[in-house]
Image (tube, rainbow, N blue to C red; front, side):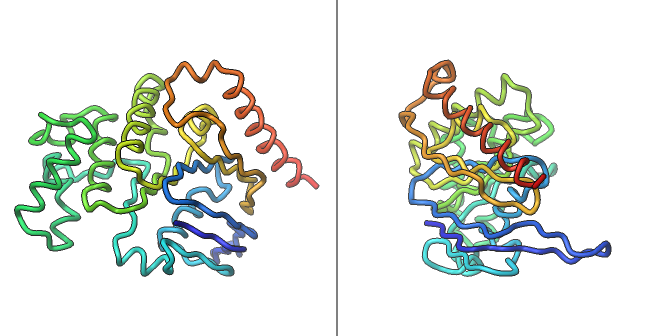
Length: 257
């Protein structure tokens, strides 16, 4: 679904060039749940934005569903969920979800059908007429996910969507996201700072180094697709988490050399 080959990205700033990504290569298969983890400023979000055609790499090649990222964007191949829910306060939950469908020119009937479907999918039925300020932070993020799913994109790009939520809400939404992934079969790329979150959610964990962002490890998870929070106490889970920590530590050591 996604191929990244020898990607470099350097930003030109008033203070000089900033080398954000260095020689990044990655393959994401259809149906994968891939988490990107690394220290702040390592290029996790930048890499996600390169995949989404929101940033143009200085060097290297990227393809999304066998097309250049900008063509994939125009073909509506992915939905993007940002760190903040980004809901319009003057629109209801239903109105926010319908927004991309309105822009894309869907008929009134299809807008209603798609909106109803994704509201049920993220378990917000009964809140269609509520405004964002009437929702909890977790519910706002679920509405944001529903909006990204409304036009049925093959890929869901998620930039640390639960980072600002407390641990209890975050755990619950992690479980709901896994169920959503299982029901839809979407390919998901997910940015996080949390090791337990990355290990719990993912079929593949991409560990990145401090800037310039490089991939220090790619971990294929042996955990079963169906998971409960109790799996965090398992030997396998702890071993994967330790390998992630070692990859993060290795990235810092490489930086010091």
